[in-house]
Length: 379
Image 1 (cartoon, rainbow, N blue to C red):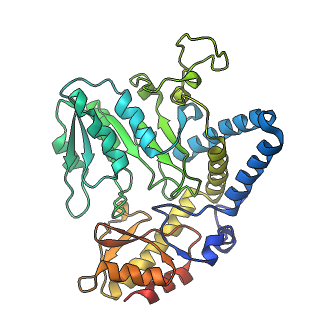
Image 2 (spheres, rainbow, N blue to C red; image 1 turned 90 degrees about the horizontal axis):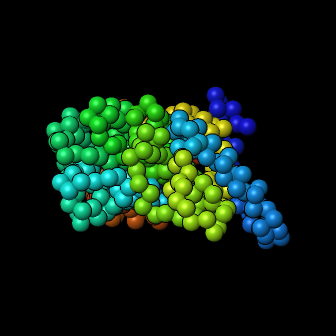
């Protein structure tokens, strides 16, 4: 167990071999996994290789343990956690499960990642309109959102953190607004979980979705969806399968008797390998402490901001304390973004280009040496 009051960041860094080869500042895209995740997945595969179905119960029990960890991460109940293959699938649970009426609308911010766009646009065939909340300076306020709500608004869906510039939405204020107006509140949390504290209860979130391969430092193809008990009553199961049923092992019983919790949305065989990796990463993150991780990332981001501005670079990410995240986007008025990106690439800095800016996204195991290499590589 790692002491969350004083984590040894050097020891934690040693769990990530990627740090020996690259300056990895791209956790907002696909993160490297740790040696812990690698070992747990390898052990699982070995057991299946030598034992087959004999070890199945062990890993189904482990899946239930993983629900407990995921619930702990976001202050939910394990019964409110469903495993999904990716963030999009979780958003689709809401889009395809809410009982829409023709003329209803859903609000989403401008510049959302497609995972939080296409599931809603697909509802146009049912006469449901997707309305876009415009951004000002890469951000929006609760008042901006409130101006777009009308009597036909049935849901608000947004990213906890913007994938382009790292703008962090005020989930608590937005959640309260939605609750007061009787509107479903849906959150794409993939750019927040593992890096920032998220409390679905405090923020009145109805449904949250995030997969493991970004800040959660887990494998691709596995994620979690939180469906609140209250939301469960208003959400139809659009993809019905045998695992949705109470009697999921009675294979010739075709009576539709849905499970009473969020697991009714897990229609078929679980991604056990992915769940094993997710559990390993959740254990590590929770043992460090999300508060400690958020503080560490914030310190790294602040150092980057100070040094970049001193060198004449412009920060595209919002700089208000309550709007910052683990993502920092920057550019230069006189240097092409492609040039900046290529210089970093040559220095083995793994980052991204988004919205005509360079996007950096460090995690807790990055350090000052990494930052210095980034700064030295800038044109």
